[in-house]
Length: 506
Image 1: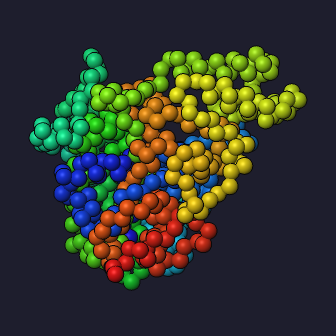
Image 2: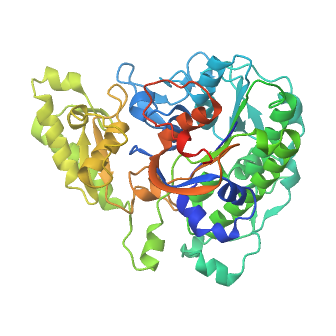
Image 3: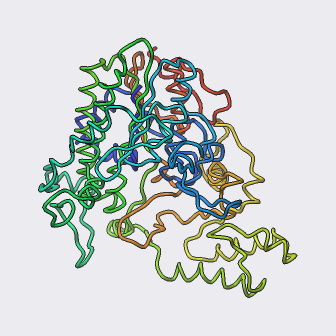
């Protein structure tokens, strides 16, 4: 099984750029069952939550991976989603099993490997029983003590594969001007800080250094590096070489870095996708020669989408807004108002977590403070709704068939699906659509709106013919659907639905 996740690959990209996709992405679109209306069904659309949902079939409220990090009320420390005191990085914070774990339970002879540009992507994709999870660090691929380090890894790193780009420039692949215009590719005005191709990597150094390797991470060439690692894993570990089914999860990351830096209508994002299309074509050709694509189940999805840049929205006559100083002042005024009303104390432990002990010692009704904070935050510009802990605790889960698709009930379910009582903050903020909660240049994600939830859901497998399916599905359906195709027994209490029966050739 080849489990592909592309960080920040909105389904909108595949629709808009489809005429230019003739490589690996084009192959998957042409030969796969393509769910054209697939969405993340949780509100906090970030990397950790997305990868955990895709691999486990469970929403963040059950997986525990509510975000990339959260506050530990017991210790007062910030917790990174894959941090581990003993091993540094592990899936110990993941409260559920993944499809790789299910495969291992079914057939201990199966091999499970995962790799990605980010440690959280690799670890959460691989799950608890992975033979290895590898991630990028200063030009090399590394792991933690939780996993057994592959005996070939040092030799692979010693090749210094990325050094071939030292002294080179990132130039865009040729695309006609009229096509760029049709795709909505624009160069937004950044004033004296305007950036444009070509891009060098690193600084004026005579040798590759950490700056060089860091810059490469934010370029499409790092995706090619991951594909090179994938080929080595397949060869060195003999994946697909016997009767035991194997799992290889790959989390491509360059698009997320480029999207954050330049926004979804940039030439840089287009070029990253076009080069990913080429990289995947090369990888699939290698897999075909080594194993035979007829013997492989392939899936493609993404952990989240991306918010269109406010400057782009304004250029096409639509509304968009970015965080400004007034927004910051409004939030700070909420803290001042709490002090004025309840006294000079720290009523919030950190961020949006209430200090329940301080509130109790002061003899104040906690619900009163919660309502007051929610009311004050709701007065800030572009805050559509403040979902409180009490509100979400009182929410009941619904089945996939009963899931609303619009209105307040829809957003309530998305925020509920992102809420874990022990880990989540006491207040979840729903900003207005197309409000970018970021002051720095570039774009981001993390909202419950379609531009962040709408992602690819493609399955290519023996016995599954190419077709487009317009039914609304959720990313939590991916793991159980793949398990159904592979004949893997999945837990019965998943949030996702096995849709494999609808994919079989009639």
